[in-house]
Amino acid sequence: MMNVFSKLNKSCLLIPLLFPVMQSCFALDVNDTAELKVTGKITPSSCTLTLGTGASIAGALNYEDLGNSEAAAPSGFPYVGIGQKTLPNAVTLNCEGATLIGVATTDNRSATISSVIPEAKTYNANGTQAGTTTRLLGLGLDSKNTSIGAYAGTFINLKVDGTPARFSTCMSESTFTGATIEQGGALVVGACPAGQSHQILDTKNASLTGNIFVWDYIIDSYTQPLASLDSSGWHLDGSVTVQINYL
Image 1 (cartoon, rainbow, N blue to C red):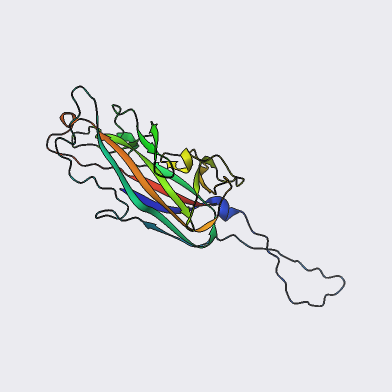
Image 2: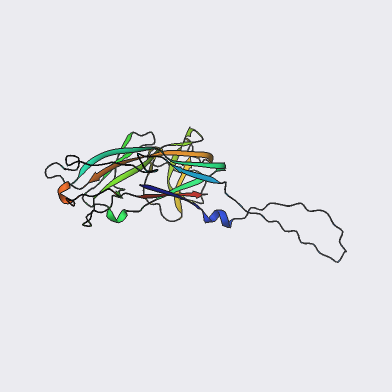
């Protein structure tokens, strides 16, 4: 399951916009004084988040039931791949005005990443495989508190107002001069350091504002062999939070 929430970046709330205000003229005695105050505030454009729809739950990628053959690793092999899943239009952000955003992610199951799984497949912005990554996400625990497995997640096919765009690497949320793109313009899901997020870039790697942001989510998942997990059954429980920062 992928949970998504939005959060106003504090820098937007603390930096005032100085906006002059004209007032009616009035007469003053020569010894009187008048104070002209220039005030204002920044209010980010109102944006609405919508999750893509999986088989039954919005924002969910569902492997459904895994049979014995699907969860059985080859002899002597410590894990088994259960395949890739893609959620089209996983996140849609619709803003009333041109908005500059940053994207940050948090793995809510990071403590459950299985140590027997060394890497997983990851993808470029256009959906082609880019190789593998060790930036893994957790799949939860079985009833005996055994780690079920691990997976990698990638945001791909980013479009801003219908035009292809790119994700940057993690970068300061106060820098707007462009940056290096993430993996072919995709975003490999994993935590950024505090105060950083993935910005949205145009094809020249310059910071890009927009009204409508849309991207897909693709995952590649692995479990421990069936013999290593609770024989009475278990369920996958991956969960990622996506945070949208108004920059």
